[in-house]
Length: 144
Length: 102
Image (cartoon, rainbow over the protein chains, first blue to last red):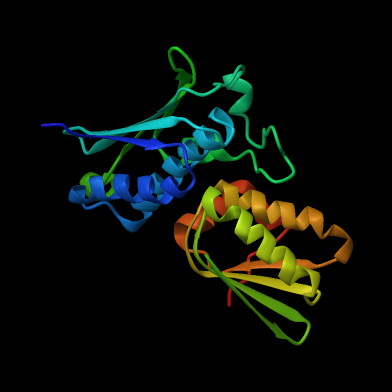
Protein backbone atom coordinates (compact mmCIF):
# COMPACT_ATOMS: atom_id res chain seq x y z
CA UNK A 1 0.00 0.00 0.00
CA UNK A 2 1.20 3.52 -0.72
CA UNK A 3 2.51 5.57 2.16
CA UNK A 4 2.04 9.32 2.25
CA UNK A 5 2.97 12.42 4.24
CA UNK A 6 1.94 16.07 3.95
CA UNK A 7 3.97 18.84 5.55
CA UNK A 8 2.87 22.46 5.55
CA UNK A 9 5.46 25.02 6.65
CA UNK A 10 5.89 28.77 6.73
CA UNK A 11 8.22 30.02 3.99
CA UNK A 12 11.08 30.62 6.44
CA UNK A 13 14.64 29.59 5.71
CA UNK A 14 15.03 27.94 9.12
CA UNK A 15 12.40 25.41 7.98
CA UNK A 16 14.63 24.16 5.15
CA UNK A 17 16.72 21.90 7.35
CA UNK A 18 13.56 20.66 9.10
CA UNK A 19 11.80 19.81 5.82
CA UNK A 20 14.88 18.01 4.42
CA UNK A 21 15.25 15.90 7.55
CA UNK A 22 11.52 15.13 7.69
CA UNK A 23 11.32 13.84 4.12
CA UNK A 24 14.57 11.90 4.62
CA UNK A 25 13.13 10.29 7.76
CA UNK A 26 9.90 9.48 5.91
CA UNK A 27 11.75 7.33 3.34
CA UNK A 28 14.01 5.66 5.92
CA UNK A 29 11.90 2.47 5.98
CA UNK A 30 12.99 1.77 2.38
CA UNK A 31 16.62 1.51 3.55
CA UNK A 32 17.90 4.08 1.06
CA UNK A 33 21.64 4.45 0.55
CA UNK A 34 23.49 7.49 1.96
CA UNK A 35 23.81 8.79 -1.61
CA UNK A 36 20.08 8.38 -2.32
CA UNK A 37 19.20 10.30 0.86
CA UNK A 38 21.74 12.97 -0.12
CA UNK A 39 20.15 13.30 -3.56
CA UNK A 40 16.62 13.64 -2.15
CA UNK A 41 17.63 16.16 0.54
CA UNK A 42 19.51 18.30 -1.97
CA UNK A 43 16.71 18.27 -4.58
CA UNK A 44 14.10 19.08 -1.93
CA UNK A 45 16.22 21.90 -0.56
CA UNK A 46 16.44 23.44 -4.04
CA UNK A 47 12.66 23.35 -4.43
CA UNK A 48 11.98 24.83 -0.97
CA UNK A 49 14.63 27.53 -1.48
CA UNK A 50 12.90 28.52 -4.74
CA UNK A 51 9.60 29.01 -2.87
CA UNK A 52 11.23 31.19 -0.20
CA UNK A 53 13.55 33.25 -2.40
CA UNK A 54 11.58 33.55 -5.66
CA UNK A 55 7.98 32.55 -4.93
CA UNK A 56 7.58 34.72 -1.84
CA UNK A 57 10.71 36.91 -2.19
CA UNK A 58 11.47 36.27 1.53
CA UNK A 59 7.95 37.41 2.49
CA UNK A 60 5.09 35.63 4.22
CA UNK A 61 3.58 32.49 2.74
CA UNK A 62 3.05 28.75 3.09
CA UNK A 63 4.83 25.86 1.42
CA UNK A 64 3.15 22.47 1.11
CA UNK A 65 5.40 19.44 0.74
CA UNK A 66 3.83 16.09 -0.11
CA UNK A 67 5.75 12.85 -0.33
CA UNK A 68 4.31 9.53 -1.42
CA UNK A 69 6.01 6.17 -1.72
CA UNK A 70 4.45 3.59 -4.02
CA UNK A 71 4.81 -0.19 -4.32
CA UNK A 72 7.70 0.20 -6.73
CA UNK A 73 9.95 1.85 -4.09
CA UNK A 74 9.48 5.15 -5.90
CA UNK A 75 9.18 8.39 -3.96
CA UNK A 76 6.99 11.11 -5.45
CA UNK A 77 7.60 14.55 -3.94
CA UNK A 78 5.68 17.72 -4.66
CA UNK A 79 6.59 21.17 -3.38
CA UNK A 80 3.91 23.82 -3.88
CA UNK A 81 3.66 27.53 -3.09
CA UNK A 82 1.21 30.34 -3.82
CA UNK A 83 3.82 32.95 -4.59
CA UNK A 84 4.48 34.91 -7.76
CA UNK A 85 5.21 31.85 -9.88
CA UNK A 86 7.50 31.87 -12.92
CA UNK A 87 6.42 33.52 -16.17
CA UNK A 88 8.78 31.57 -18.42
CA UNK A 89 9.34 28.18 -16.79
CA UNK A 90 11.39 26.81 -19.69
CA UNK A 91 13.83 29.73 -19.47
CA UNK A 92 14.09 29.50 -15.67
CA UNK A 93 15.03 25.83 -15.97
CA UNK A 94 18.07 26.52 -18.14
CA UNK A 95 21.36 25.85 -16.28
CA UNK A 96 22.91 29.03 -14.83
CA UNK A 97 19.76 31.10 -15.41
CA UNK A 98 19.34 33.36 -12.39
CA UNK A 99 17.47 36.55 -11.66
CA UNK A 100 20.34 37.62 -9.36
CA UNK A 101 23.47 36.05 -10.89
CA UNK A 102 26.01 37.76 -8.58
CA UNK A 103 25.21 35.63 -5.55
CA UNK A 104 23.03 32.88 -7.08
CA UNK A 105 24.28 29.97 -9.13
CA UNK A 106 21.13 29.34 -11.22
CA UNK A 107 21.66 25.61 -10.67
CA UNK A 108 18.51 24.79 -8.69
CA UNK A 109 16.40 23.12 -11.39
CA UNK A 110 19.48 21.47 -12.93
CA UNK A 111 20.28 19.85 -9.58
CA UNK A 112 16.67 18.69 -9.11
CA UNK A 113 16.68 17.25 -12.62
CA UNK A 114 19.92 15.34 -12.28
CA UNK A 115 19.52 14.15 -8.67
CA UNK A 116 16.00 12.81 -9.24
CA UNK A 117 14.68 10.52 -12.02
CA UNK A 118 11.96 12.89 -13.17
CA UNK A 119 11.14 16.59 -12.70
CA UNK A 120 7.98 18.44 -13.64
CA UNK A 121 7.41 22.15 -13.01
CA UNK A 122 4.01 23.72 -13.52
CA UNK A 123 1.98 26.76 -12.41
CA UNK A 124 -0.09 26.30 -9.25
CA UNK A 125 -3.68 27.55 -8.95
CA UNK A 126 -4.64 30.27 -8.29
CA UNK A 127 -0.99 31.38 -8.17
CA UNK A 128 2.50 30.07 -7.54
CA UNK A 129 4.42 27.02 -8.61
CA UNK A 130 4.30 23.23 -8.16
CA UNK A 131 7.49 21.22 -8.49
CA UNK A 132 7.00 17.46 -8.80
CA UNK A 133 9.93 15.08 -8.57
CA UNK A 134 10.19 11.31 -8.49
CA UNK A 135 13.02 8.94 -7.68
CA UNK A 136 13.12 5.15 -7.51
CA UNK A 137 15.11 3.94 -4.54
CA UNK A 138 17.23 0.79 -4.17
CA UNK A 139 17.58 0.67 -7.93
CA UNK A 140 21.04 -0.86 -7.78
CA UNK A 141 20.10 -3.42 -5.15
CA UNK A 142 16.94 -4.62 -6.92
CA UNK A 143 18.46 -4.82 -10.38
CA UNK A 144 21.35 -7.09 -9.34
CA UNK B 1 27.30 26.71 10.69
CA UNK B 2 30.78 26.84 12.17
CA UNK B 3 33.64 28.41 10.27
CA UNK B 4 37.26 28.26 11.39
CA UNK B 5 40.47 29.21 9.64
CA UNK B 6 44.17 28.58 9.98
CA UNK B 7 47.16 30.20 8.25
CA UNK B 8 50.00 27.87 7.27
CA UNK B 9 52.77 29.35 5.11
CA UNK B 10 51.16 30.98 2.07
CA UNK B 11 47.91 29.08 2.60
CA UNK B 12 44.75 29.94 4.51
CA UNK B 13 42.68 26.86 5.32
CA UNK B 14 38.99 27.60 5.86
CA UNK B 15 36.95 24.83 7.45
CA UNK B 16 33.16 24.81 7.24
CA UNK B 17 31.08 22.60 9.52
CA UNK B 18 27.30 22.19 9.59
CA UNK B 19 24.76 22.92 6.86
CA UNK B 20 25.11 25.59 4.18
CA UNK B 21 21.72 26.56 2.76
CA UNK B 22 19.56 29.67 2.42
CA UNK B 23 19.30 29.96 6.20
CA UNK B 24 23.06 30.00 6.87
CA UNK B 25 24.15 31.70 3.61
CA UNK B 26 24.24 35.29 4.90
CA UNK B 27 26.25 34.39 8.00
CA UNK B 28 28.62 32.30 5.84
CA UNK B 29 29.13 35.14 3.33
CA UNK B 30 29.92 37.67 6.04
CA UNK B 31 32.25 35.33 7.90
CA UNK B 32 34.11 34.32 4.74
CA UNK B 33 34.47 37.97 3.67
CA UNK B 34 35.95 38.78 7.07
CA UNK B 35 38.49 35.92 6.78
CA UNK B 36 39.32 36.63 3.10
CA UNK B 37 40.06 40.32 3.85
CA UNK B 38 43.19 39.16 5.74
CA UNK B 39 43.85 35.82 4.05
CA UNK B 40 46.99 34.48 2.39
CA UNK B 41 47.16 34.08 -1.40
CA UNK B 42 46.27 30.38 -1.47
CA UNK B 43 42.82 29.52 -0.08
CA UNK B 44 41.84 25.95 0.70
CA UNK B 45 38.22 25.33 1.68
CA UNK B 46 37.86 22.23 3.83
CA UNK B 47 34.33 20.79 3.52
CA UNK B 48 34.96 17.64 5.55
CA UNK B 49 32.71 18.94 8.33
CA UNK B 50 29.99 20.12 5.95
CA UNK B 51 27.00 17.81 6.29
CA UNK B 52 24.85 19.54 3.70
CA UNK B 53 25.12 22.14 0.96
CA UNK B 54 22.82 23.00 -1.94
CA UNK B 55 23.17 25.42 -4.85
CA UNK B 56 22.81 28.38 -2.48
CA UNK B 57 26.30 27.40 -1.31
CA UNK B 58 27.56 27.45 -4.90
CA UNK B 59 26.24 31.01 -5.12
CA UNK B 60 28.12 31.91 -1.93
CA UNK B 61 31.39 30.52 -3.36
CA UNK B 62 30.96 32.21 -6.76
CA UNK B 63 30.05 35.45 -4.97
CA UNK B 64 33.32 35.35 -2.96
CA UNK B 65 35.29 34.53 -6.13
CA UNK B 66 33.87 37.61 -7.87
CA UNK B 67 34.16 39.89 -4.86
CA UNK B 68 37.84 39.09 -4.27
CA UNK B 69 38.84 38.94 -7.93
CA UNK B 70 41.39 41.77 -7.43
CA UNK B 71 43.13 39.91 -4.58
CA UNK B 72 44.42 37.27 -7.02
CA UNK B 73 43.65 34.40 -4.66
CA UNK B 74 43.96 30.84 -5.88
CA UNK B 75 41.07 28.84 -4.44
CA UNK B 76 40.91 25.08 -3.84
CA UNK B 77 38.10 22.84 -2.56
CA UNK B 78 38.60 19.72 -0.46
CA UNK B 79 36.83 17.21 1.74
CA UNK B 80 33.39 17.20 0.06
CA UNK B 81 31.19 14.16 0.73
CA UNK B 82 29.87 12.29 -2.32
CA UNK B 83 26.59 14.23 -2.61
CA UNK B 84 28.35 17.57 -2.26
CA UNK B 85 30.99 16.46 -4.76
CA UNK B 86 28.17 15.86 -7.27
CA UNK B 87 26.75 19.37 -6.62
CA UNK B 88 30.20 20.91 -7.07
CA UNK B 89 30.91 18.92 -10.24
CA UNK B 90 27.51 19.73 -11.78
CA UNK B 91 27.97 23.46 -11.11
CA UNK B 92 31.32 23.52 -12.89
CA UNK B 93 32.92 25.34 -9.97
CA UNK B 94 35.93 22.98 -10.00
CA UNK B 95 37.10 24.80 -13.15
CA UNK B 96 37.72 27.96 -11.09
CA UNK B 97 38.32 26.28 -7.70
CA UNK B 98 40.06 22.95 -8.37
CA UNK B 99 39.52 19.90 -6.20
CA UNK B 100 42.35 19.15 -3.81
CA UNK B 101 42.78 15.75 -2.22
CA UNK B 102 44.23 16.20 1.25
